[in-house]
Length: 176
Image 1: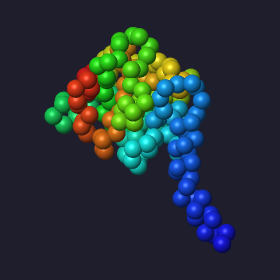
Image 2: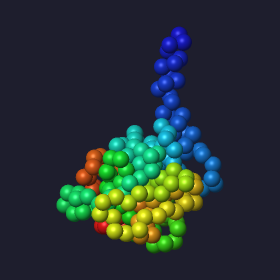
Image 3: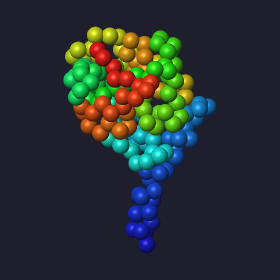
Image 4: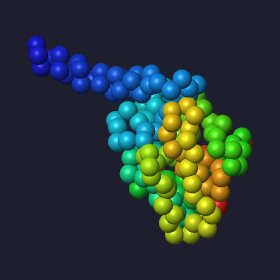
């Protein structure tokens, strides 16, 4: 009987972690999808199970982020980030150098922010010619990486390095 309870608790653990992450304080209007510390609760699963890119964002956040320029399919040379080299994007509704992200709530489910742990900054890698920085997200206090004053995001449907499936109206890959 104890073995069955343990199995039920283990199966419920991801749900408990997601609920805990979604109910964290901050008085904000959105739920974070990327953690600033190594955590199994980093990806949001409001709509579905976590995808590789959501996990990618989480691992980039946990270890700091290296941003570099790499050729990605038909979009050419663009910025990629994290230990897995996933493509990063900017959001047209973000205002350069405003220190704010316009992507909140459901937006962050599809477009997880590229974050770094408190006290860290992103590291420029090969081909990065612009300026990397961070902003403090108002919703949860995490540090989101910026490039030339614009916040950076991953796209949840990018599954592997070299994917750039997040080019939509208001979303663009980042050219070095």
